[in-house]
Length: 273
Ligand SMILES: Cc1cc2nc3c(=O)[nH]c(=O)nc-3n(C[C@H](O)[C@H](O)[C@H](O)COP(=O)(O)OP(=O)(O)OC[C@H]3O[C@@H](n4cnc5c(N)ncnc54)[C@H](O)[C@@H]3O)c2cc1C
Image (cartoon, rainbow, N blue to C red; front, top):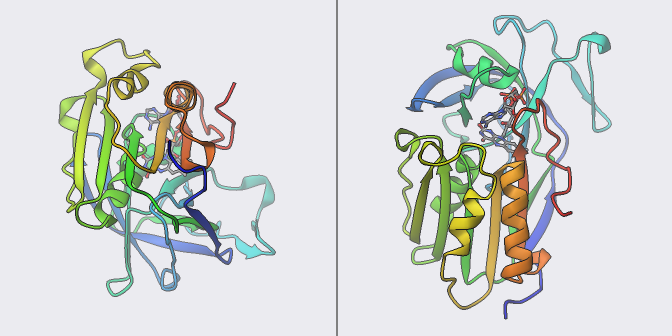
């Protein structure tokens, strides 16, 4: 029986807006590009937890910076309130204060302000960023980690795995569209990873990740389970973890990062039914 006590402590950060520029774009796989950002307003950036959300703002003309808002009382005030930029949440993959660089890994999936901006990003292009507003840091006891996600969740999952102490038991179940989208994960943790390739089954199967997780033997001890990816799949994962594995709410975090056929999905939408 795992502890019901939450191992998470929430740390709030001041609300800051940053105008950033692309330093370089590095393709990690055919559909995942790492954008390295920099800028005079990047120093002081803080992201204490692997799953911190950073809100990014995408200018339709990436060479134009006339739209820059100011942060006031926890909100953004735009030069033209009728023409705010589209924004989406992303994970900070790596921040290097000395080099003044922030890496963000983008899934290039097709149409969408974020995907389109990232696919075409060139050195010097502009991007807005606010947050993270808060970090959920690991403060309590965790004997082992269960990490589940698709390609949108992989940046946060990889960052977490890389940061874990040597020997920490981690079971990861990662779904990507094809085998060519797999990425190596560098870690001294005791990692057992299962890759799922979407093209090897029904592409609309929302139970794919949950089915693989249901076949796993879980270690003893206090787990922290974290999952992020397509909302339908995350609903099935959450249902399995709650109903069949009995993992207490406080020891898991399952989030729909995007939803099939929906633009600008609200990841705060509850997944429990
Ligand atoms: C806290 C948080 C952290 C996130 N971190 C990352 C991250 O580090 N890297 C990352 O790539 N994504 C990440 N995401 C997911 C990302 O915000 C969404 O995928 C977002 O919808 C992409 O915006 P868009 O403008 O490209 O597409 P949208 O305009 O939102 O959607 C357009 C169309 O594309 C589809 N679509 C959206 N995302 C995907 C996808 N990943 N795969 C296939 N189809 C998709 C939609 O269903 C819709 O049909 C994160 C989400 C959250 C909430």
